[in-house]
Image (tube, rainbow, N blue to C red):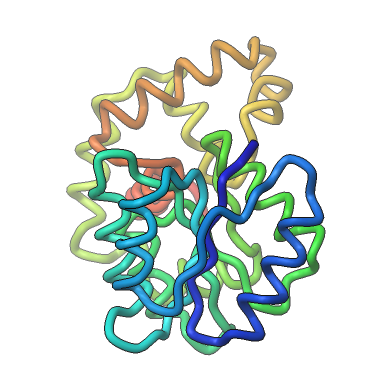
Length: 216
């Protein structure tokens, strides 16, 4: 059972998401919060697997909340919810440790899929929004590109292959098929990549790869 938390200052949004998630037999809405401070309190009181976190909220916004949630002893994975006009906030949320983000008008089946994917350690980024964020805030001539390239030099050639596909949004199963590997081997490679690059999740590894110009 995936224990989920919904964090949004709009009561109707919380109600709609709760109805959606509770309709999935493998997801339980364990907690709800109307702002970042309540989210920290709820995540401290309950063991949360996946938190869906709005970006703009009173008292503590979703970016700060993501940083605080990821710093907990048992950190939940975070999916940031946003509108298409908040790209800079979304990028900052990903940099803070979010495992992905969705637009609020995302199809309900995709929201459920995102919760399941993120709960297993994968990432879920809305393709159009991800492309827009990366194009605007992660150009390869950014000053951090050289530093990112140096960090990628620590990887083996096979790990770079895995990272390239990971950065394109492929799941472990997709990578295993494309590289003719066992899925368990891919998982082991991903774990080593995260440790070697000193990042907390797949999204941060993907952004680092794009910083270095490994993918477009």
